[in-house]
Image (cartoon, rainbow, N blue to C red; front, side):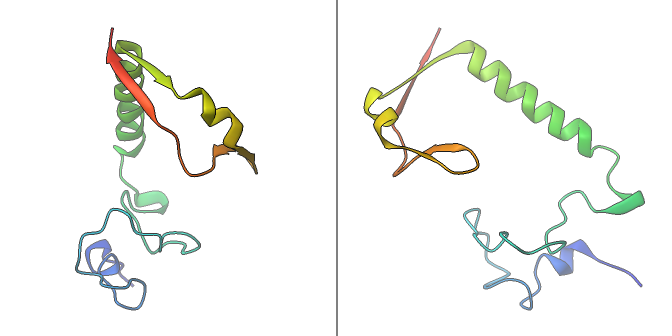
Length: 97
């Protein structure tokens, strides 16, 4: 048995319009093991944790080098579910320090 992520990620069985690049796909919700960017199991990508750590470091460096401020009215639109989020989004200003 062989699983080819290239074919799995382009399967019309799992995805609507599988050959079109759409970073805003909502289809990832509830589908398990249909999207394998780092593979799965004992043969998963050895660089997975490095790549995720590198992304966290890059985001941290960006945030430390910038001043981020948001509109105070956002606090009035907070909704509590499992985490807090702002209903209808929020506007933020980013300025270099």
